[in-house]
Image (cartoon, rainbow, N blue to C red; front, side, top):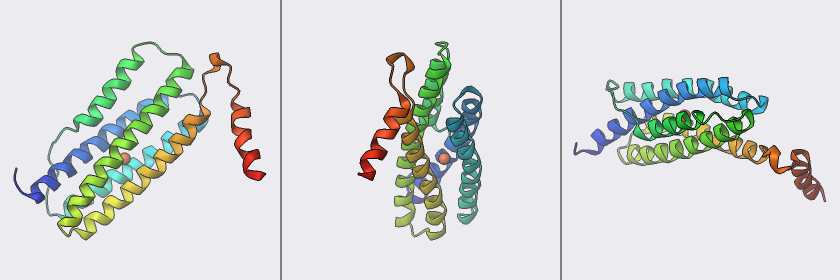
Length: 176
Ligand SMILES: [Fe+2]
């Protein structure tokens, strides 16, 4: 591999495989999680991820290329991390906390991947591809913010932290 275009196509294939792996992982996480807010968030992102895969396929059409099999080792590693955690037979509460954190890690990974690919595509003048990739990037950024807000609410019951109290305080401060 030598050219920027080859690099771009390689990275596009990598992200496509990553998104497909994430789609499968989300299905598992939706089954595993118990907190309704978390399940709802994951379900919404599952729908978004299906659209993101379609947009990536459109990128290949724009480039007159066929997707090829490239394994996204980064997402593969994150999925393996999840699987080995689940082998520890965690409680329902811990599964929610882990999966919320795992979603945050995935989003950071995806955001960095999209940003890098967008930079290359901009240099190559691939406007339509950049537009499509930016839509995916925006959704990942929204999902990251959603998961971060949710992670703040997920407390360890054994530590006796009152969730309601934690949420109410900042609101009171804002109103003052
Ligand atoms: Fe995604």
